[in-house]
Structures are given as structure tokens and as C-alpha cells.
Amino acid sequence: MLGKLSETLRKITDKVANAIFLDKNLVESIVKELQRAMIEADINISLVGEISQEIRKAAFDERIKGIEKKEHIIKLLHDELLRILGKKKEIHLGKKEIFILVGLYGSGKTTTAGKLAFYYSKRGRKVCCVGLDVHRPAAAEQLKQVCEKINIKCFIESKEKNSLKIWKNFEKEIKQYDLVIVDTAGRDALDDPLIEEIKNLGKAVKPTESFLVIPADIGQAAKKQARAFKEALRISGVIITRMDSSAKGGGALTAAAEAEAQVAFIGTGEKMNELESFDPESFLSRLLGMGDLKALMERIHSVMNEKEAERQKKKLEERKFTLRDLQGQLDSMQEIGSFDKIMLMIPGLGKLQDKIPTNELEGQQERVKRWKHIINSMTEEEIENPDILEKQTSRIQRIAKGSGATSTDVRMLLKQYKMLNEMIKSQAEMQEGKIDQKMIMKMARKFGKKLRF
Ligand SMILES: Nc1nc2c(ncn2[C@@H]2O[C@H](COP(=O)(O)OP(=O)(O)OP(=O)(O)O)[C@@H](O)[C@H]2O)c(=O)[nH]1
Ligand SMILES: [Mg+2]
Image 1 (cartoon, rainbow, N blue to C red):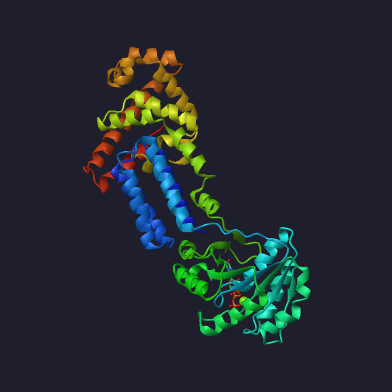
Image 2: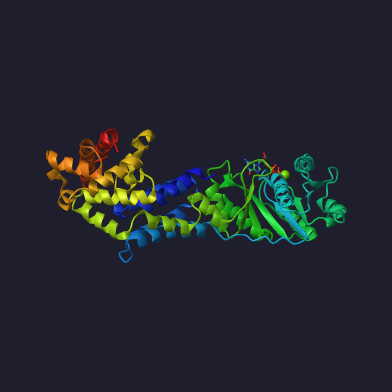
């Protein structure tokens, strides 16, 4: 369900969280990625535009700096998405509730009637269904079959052609149920006869909730339909079905909420248990792949402290990445506990990460430790200026001895450091537009193969 959007949102929040500083290129690439994924999920283009603008504005707002800025951008993305998902629909269940389901042909009313019955019976309610679709000959039978599967009492009268009469006939019997779910007939379009019939049914049934059932495939047309139905009758909530099978789910969801028709449930499959109550906040958390906003904010803080980020930014601007910087990276990495983060934390190297086979990422923790010991055995001068170590076998031996490593280990570290430095220099040039796309690919291949941690 909305898999691509979810994936992109996760990637983007990670990118923001892990970036040492948010430069123009990074922000633009994030905005582009976000736009593409949102449009693919069929979210309204003007909403996409609004969110992009807000993110750009926040990113380039000079008054907000460092970690605060990262938090600000992620919170903004979160809040904007939440805004377009609308408010949570509260359903309070008393002892005498009647839900009526309306909607166009094939929108999923009958299936959803069964799902709702199942949902509430699992939560301890005494539920029954009433079939009032007298237009389609097989409709009553369909509801009956659905109810049989889930062991729910179903009231139908296949021969009767007047829905009001059916309702009257069962009115007494259904009194013993806490929740009565009423299935109605669909139509090709929202036309006068449908509205008339639903109005009359409304008067007779007196539902406590009237749900409009809309399939996700209609995407942004959900807005128009929700509005039209809302004007015609007192729709108290929307149920969006087929969220599982439509790329337009994001469109239907946001459009319905935009029409101020609160989304109450979403259908996520054909099976009876594939119905979820819709809570915008937790839906969004799931899309973003995190517990809540607070958890994410904590993560941003843990990735790197602000001072360190500033220092590295300055270094990068001077195009100098010393062993001290590498040490800083190694420190932050141990806090996060995952080695591959090093690639993400060095600006521009994130995209090379995929190029390194996973098996080579294993056993790195050990190497990280070794490297840290080696750097700790160096003098200030050596750390700031590792070039002086070149060909100085005695210094290398001293460092090796001091750190319990071998000279080969020390040389290996120096070699890797040199390579990282070279990459970072190219990265800085890339940001100035000196290197084109082809060059990047070439570099990725070259370093992807050579880098060994
Ligand atoms: N994948 C998927 N299919 C669904 C979902 N909800 C309903 N369907 C399918 O959609 C089709 C139509 O569902 P119905 O429940 O018959 O729709 P209806 O609104 O009652 O149709 P009419 O009574 O003809 O107006 C059926 O094949 C259902 O199995 C859902 O959430 N996911
Ligand atoms: Mg039906």
C-alpha cells in the first residue's frame, strides 16, 4: 500500500537526518524525489507544489541552522502530510448503532459491510447486516454469503423489491443487536433517483453513521464524489476501498480528506479482515517508517552533534579531510552502531553505498575499532597532516606497536584515508559543477571496487 511513496519518504527523512549540512543540491534532490513519489501516488499536484515550496523555504531560511533546521524540515514534511490526510474520524459506539453504506456501483459496499461486521464483532459487539440492495438480483445473496463466512446474522428478502418494506419487516428483530450494518444499492453515477432513494432510506433507517464507500482507483475524483454525496446526504465518514491494489491510493485519501469528508476506514484487500480504521497520525508514521516524530527527532540528534557537523562542513569547504575527521566519523558511527552509516555521513558518498557488496560490510565493526586505536596512537601532527607518515617506516611501526595493530593495518588505514580524501575533493568539485554525471558514475565504479573497510 503506497509502497513507493513510503519508500521515498523514508529515504528522504534518512537523507535529511544523515546530511552533514543541507546544501542547495541536496534540498533540490530531496524535493524532486518527493515530488515524483507524490505524483506517482496521485496526490494533488498543487498540494505537491505547496509542500515543495514549504520545504525549500525552510531549507534556505537563514534564521534556522544546523540540527534545528533538519528537525524543522522533517517536522514540516510530517505536518504537511498530516494536514492533507485530514482529521481522524472518531466513532463512538453505544448500544444502538446503525451504519449505512452508500456509494456507486462496485465501490465495495457489500464487501465492506461484511468487513465492518467482522471488525466490530471481533471487538465484542453484537452485529448484524441488513441487505437493502433491491436493484441487483444477486445482491442479497452476495451479502448472505459474505455474512455466512464470518458468522454474522444477515437479514435479506430476495423477493421484495421495496427496500423500505424490507427495513420495516426487520425493524423489530434487529433491535437486539448493538450494531446494524445496512448495505444499499449502487448506481452508475450520483443521479436524482439514487439521491431520492438514499434520502428516503435515511429517513426510515435513521443511521448513526452514514459511510460513503469510494474505491481508491478513482484517485483525485474522490474529492468530487465526496463533495457531491456530502451535499446530497449527511455523509458522516468515508471508507476508501482497494487501497491495496491502486497506485492512486494517495490521491483518493488526500482528496477525500480535502473535501472535509473524514476518512474513517480503509479497505486493504478482499478478505474480511482487510479493513483498517484510519488514523492519519499512525498511518503517516507507518508511511514514514518510524514510531513517531519524537523518535525521529531523537535519531537526528544521535547521528551527529552540531559542532562536529559545523567543523566538518568547514573542512569540506577547505577541501581538507584529516584523519581527525575520520576519527570523528568513526566515533559517531559507533554511537549509531552501524558501519555503513559512514558512507551516508560523508557528503556525497551515500549513493556509493549500494555499490559495496553487503558481505564486505560485515566484520567492519572490528576494523572500525582497530582504526580508532591506530588514530589514537598518532601524534597531533600526524593526525592533522598524515602525509608526513608516508615512507616513514619507523613512525608507522611506532603507531602499530602503540595500537596493537600491524604496520600493514596502519598502511591500509592511510591508503583508505587517502582515497576518501580524494573522493571528498571530487565531491566538492562536483558541487561546484565541475564534474558531470558521467564522471560521477566512473568514480562510483572506481571507488566502489577499491574501498575496503
Ligand atoms: N483488492 C480489494 N478488493 C476489494 C476491496 N473491497 C472490495 N473489493 C472488491 O471489489 C469488488 C466489488 O465489491 P462489492 O462489495 O461487490 O461492491 P458493491 O459496492 O457492493 O457493488 P454493487 O453492489 O454492485 O454496487 C469485489 O470483487 C470485491 O471483492 C478491497 O479493499 N481490496
Ligand atoms: Mg453490493
